[in-house]
Image (cartoon, rainbow, N blue to C red; front, side, top):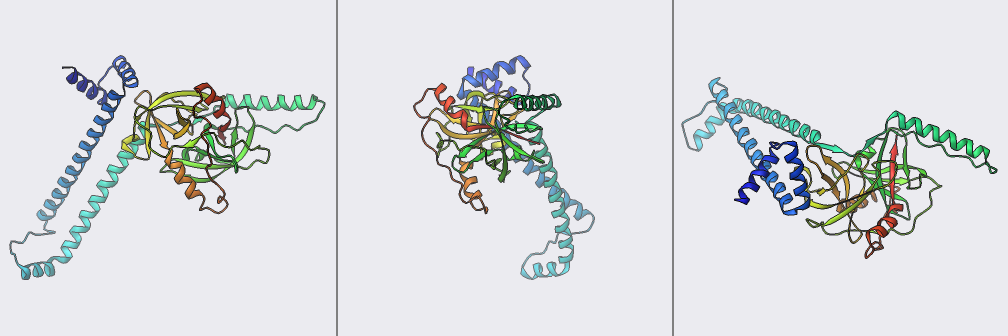
Length: 374
């Protein structure tokens, strides 16, 4: 009886038939019960397969309807004769008609495919929310005021040290260091796509440095940027590694990012091996994330990178997606082929392993940066 109630609850949740209160309670159960969360993921996968089968069947029916229409209008005919000679005869007689019919059928199939693709892509875009924070005009005015105050303070100081103006940014996201020797940072491709003029990274002390994108891959949603500012001081060797194998279901993870003007800690667990619509380049997390968390590193208890946060599902609380850490390895290999990036390499250590969470965060936060631009 409990199994029947569980199945009914999963179906109602997936179909959007729950009330707001029921949905909240059900999401809480998912967060505390990995088995239930996996059951929801498997049900959504099953229903997706059913929909795909239905689309294929409808497409076949459409082709049959096109064939029937062409027959009725005399564009093609069905011969009743058989044998090699008859086939050759029919081909000679109707090859032009068949070519026309094939062209029409091809155009119909391309049209249908494009419509389905368009609808599908629009659905994807509407259900996914990239986690880049758009900064408002009030924050811009505040930053301008801070710059003026800094200049006044510098002018009144005994040492006339010039103050570097702060960037008037339109957006904010997150990135983290992958090469402490050559100063390369990973963030999301959709973050870099926001840049129109300047790209800046800012550390947890508020210091800003110029940077430039050197590699972008939209499929993996991974971008690599290089700190180009000569004032940036190299950090010690990375205290984390990239996990070589996929993260396990139920594996606890934590994140550091910039959903506001200071670094913010979050935690959760791996809830599915694939991302939105079963995309194998991504994994699903059960956690909280906000605008500004795009590009946040996802770290397991051993201090290994398992992913890079990139988006969340709008219609489901606590459903967040991350580009898998293995994509970083692929991105580095591809970036090295671009002239000027030959020196890039990931040289990490197990410096976070064995530490308690507070110590891990203290050590990690120097390697996580705010990514800003205008």
